Length: 248
Image 1 (cartoon, helix red, strand yellow):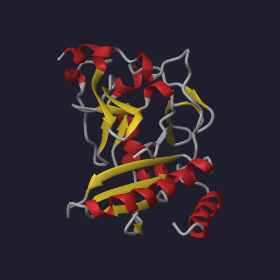
Image 2 (image 1 turned 30 degrees about the vertical axis):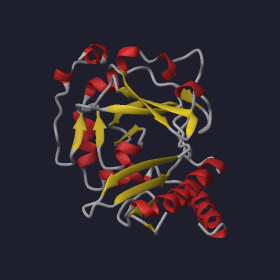
Image 3 (image 1 turned 180 degrees about the horizontal axis):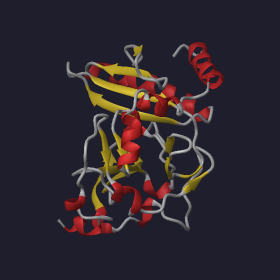
Image 4 (image 1 turned 30 degrees about the horizontal axis):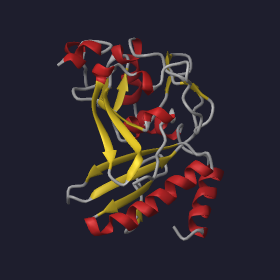
C-alpha cells in the first residue's frame, strides 16, 4: 500500500503499553507528527499559507464521498499520517472551503439522555430506526448549531450500542486556543497538561510517556483530567436555557 510510505513513522513502531489506567503510550505521535496549526476562534478558517487539507498528498487520499442531492458538498477520507492504531483515518468535509473541523448539517432525537458518570457535561441521542433519521438529525443539528452560534467548543462521537441503535454523544467543553500542544509532566505541579478532544472524551487516552500514564492511573487521575475540560457553569446553563426555550 503506497499510502504507508507517507506516515510520519512506521506502523511497525506502533508499540504501545497499557497501564492499569488503560492509557496508550505512543511517543512518536507527539514527537513526529505535523506541527499543529494555531486557532483563536472555533469558527476560524484554516490558513491558506500554512498546512490545510487541500495540501494533502494524493497518495494519502483513500476515497471521496459525494452526495446526490448536495452538488456543492464533497468530503474526503484520508489516511492519518500520525496514527495511533492500524486503519486510523480522517473524514475531511469540503476541504476546499478551509473549514476548521466544523460540523455541517448538509445532510433527536427520539430523546436526549446523559452519560451520568462522565465528568464532562454531555448530550446523548439515540437513533433506533431509519424512520427516525429525519427528525433525529434535525434535532441533533439544532444542538450543534446552538453551540456554534454561542461559540462553544464541542466534540461529537457516534457508535452502535449493544442493541444496535446508533448512539451519538455531544460534549460541550471549554475552548482551547492557540497551537494544540502537549506539556510534559510537571513534578512540582503534580500534573500534566494536554489537549483533550473526542478520542479522550470517548475514553481512549493516547499519551507520550510513562510518567503521564502513571499520573492518569492515580486515584481520580482521569476524572481530574476531564474536569479541567468542562464548560464553565454559566455557559452550560445558557446553552441549556437556549435549548429549552427553542423546544429542542
